[in-house]
Image (cartoon, rainbow, N blue to C red; front, side):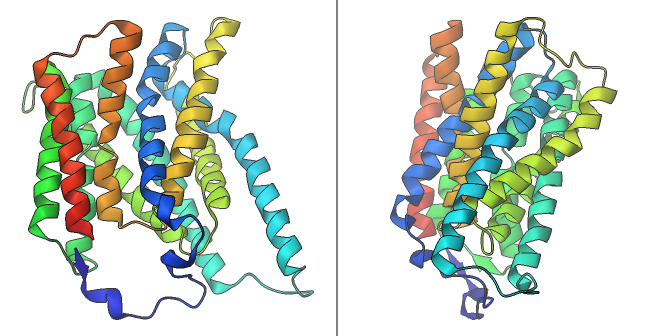
Length: 322
């Protein structure tokens, strides 16, 4: 994958991705983050069984994660300040930091819209349709790179995208019904993919200027504020009906948001966004495997073939993205 804009000088406040510690761990951390995100639909289903509807679960995912992310961001900021010393009196934020703030606000709003539209689409179409259409961000991100950034992609990358997306289609099983009788729900699934594309690109841009803990905190806190009125006005069951009902909400906050999104946001600082978004197609594979273990949802030969296609597609896209 090549980029005609690569010769353009980077902003003075941006650091070359390869100089940041942990760059060599970006790929395994990205895959680990995708695994954490793959648990999200499992936790949402468990929360639903505990009396919390999906949109409310999305809010609690953000709200419960925010305090822990705040502590993490404060700890990192204190450690950095100890190394650099206090800023001069009256110093203003660097232009790069102001740009980072704009990107973080945009990412939080895109993420809130992504979760709301996805949960809404599930109620109007099949889960299979909603899952597959949401993953169209795998196509939208490279399209943005091609038409807006002037990027060019190798044939092996494009083949990897097609293979991985086809594998994801097989993973959702025989309930897939594209072009069926639920066009509004399918349209919302496509809109979800558009919102996730905006979230993903905004986050990648923010990470050029702001640390991972601050980025995750701003995105999560902003999404929580945006989701709160949506969850209340939608009439969903906002609270769990029992104390044990908090367990899946805490799980989705810690595993899917703090760990999953945190690792992914770290990785996008070091990896091409077009490849990173393809790697996230491992999420439906993880969800299918966990559902097999917890809910006895057996994986047939079609689903297993889909999982293999996803993995091979990711590897092929990785080769083409170098």
